[in-house]
Image 1: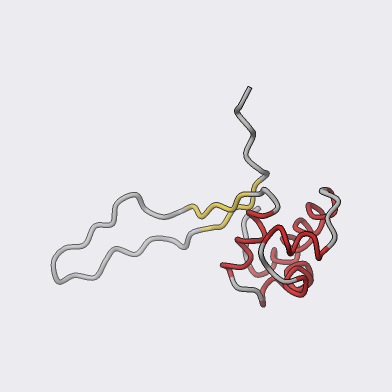
Image 2: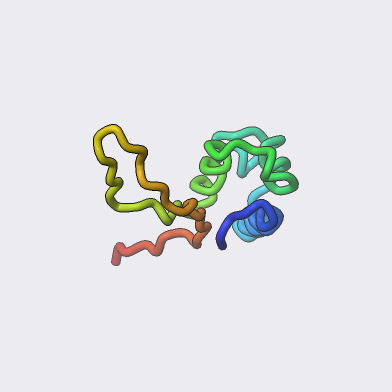
Length: 102
């Protein structure tokens, strides 16, 4: 899912669905993710008001991953010149990583 202001509501729905899929109450998820239960409520209802750092705690605590893509692998800047401008990165929310242990 590419995150943009219009898709933040979808992020909220998916975070809530994952928490419920795992059978966690808001209080339990808060304890696991090291955030407050009120933050869980806010993340599930108005994620645009939440800090990215705390959203990452929630995402990782639920066993999900969040990835930023679109960054250039090399930034070229001539001495005294402005850096080259690249497009804005996108943020992708994905499923938890697969366990590769046998």
